Amino acid sequence: MAKKEAEKPKRELTKRQLSRGQQQKKRQRIILGSGILVIVAVLSIVGAGFYNRWYIPEYKPLHQTVIKVNDTKFNMNYYIKMLKYYGSGMSVQQMYSLVDDVVTAIERDELIRQEAMALGITVSDKEVDEELKSYDSQLSKDYRDVVRTQMLVNRLSDEYFDQPQQVPVFAEQRHILAMFLESESQANEVRAKLEAGEKGFAELASELSLDSICKAKEGDLGWRPEGVLSLLIGSSILEENAFSCEVGVLSQPILDETKAKMVGYWLIEVESRDEEATEASVKVMLLGSEQEANEVRARLEAGEDFATLAEKFSQHADSKDEGGEFEVTAKGMYGAAFDEFVFSSELSVLSQPIPDDTVSTEGGYWLIKVTQVADNMEIEKDDRDLLKADALNKWVEGLFDDPKNKVVSYLDDAKKQWAILYIIGG
Image 1 (tube, rainbow, N blue to C red):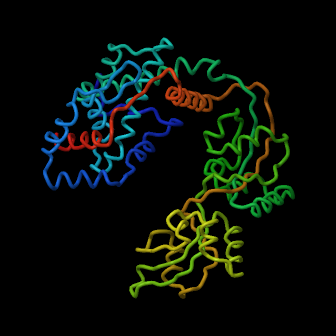
Image 2 (image 1 turned 60 degrees about the horizontal axis):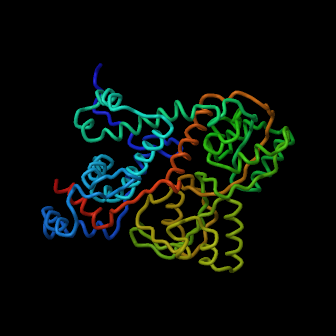
Image 3 (image 1 turned 135 degrees about the vertical axis):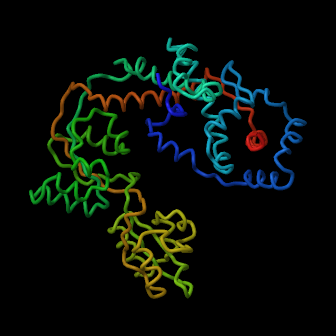
């Protein structure tokens, strides 16, 4: 059998079975803090050899136990290997952001192994060795536990969570139409058009819906069992209402305060800018709908305080707590319409609402219609796979909360820093 080309196994069980690309983004978040400054200072002053003189007098060397999961112990050498694996190709700063995540990954993987064994689900050394034949020898030597965990996860999904008592094969299902709109006024306008028969649900959903799945499916989400839409679309509000509403009746606008959408509306007042028109000091608010932006603008025109309203209504994280005060340090920070106003308008003039589809805001309104109900319909494979993945993830999360599991980390900040220094110096 031909070897796979230096392909690494999946590195961790992800929440909601996120794609590997999404998980890579998660691992690459850069957490800048005092720890990084310490590392940089140490390396610049005394060099990488410092770790040998610093760690050994105060702590035990590589064989010291740093993590304990029930009766299983992991030493510093194991932690370093896992940190190198998960941080492969990363900068020092990026790797430093992983120090706690790697601890959690080690703890989680061992809990999965122990609990799977209790369920009678195991992966033998021979099976791991067979799987490892498709990977390069260096990976197989150092990271066999990662491979074993992924094999266990697959086996749990295929054997334990495939049982009907864990995830049902048949369930009540509803045929659901839905679209997500930015404001109550827009939702009422769309609802009136639907009730009057001016346009169909599919046409309006494909044109206006701010949820990508609803838009792509022209509002027709098909037959769904309970539990799937909250995973697929990320809205418990949609699912709760779809499974409690009257069949055949178009809903009134339903508020969903936390659902994210890719649109926002700026209110901007430019206080000053440089002669080259590349930097500016502004007051800004980012609102979730044109309706809200017009309402807030009217209050500003009536004399209400910008800072007070910004702190209450703005969704712009970088200026909200500063009363809307914001420094624009370069063009292109936001959309073209934002730049045009900031660098071309008169000073001290409040803008009209400026739409921007490059920013994310929260909140909107659902329109929902359930066309049919089936009491006991077989769940489609894709939907059941989602439900199985969700059940498995909840099971894993529950392992940490189970009082019979004793999980302890002895890694303090100094030891984590030393682990990174060891990698750098190694």
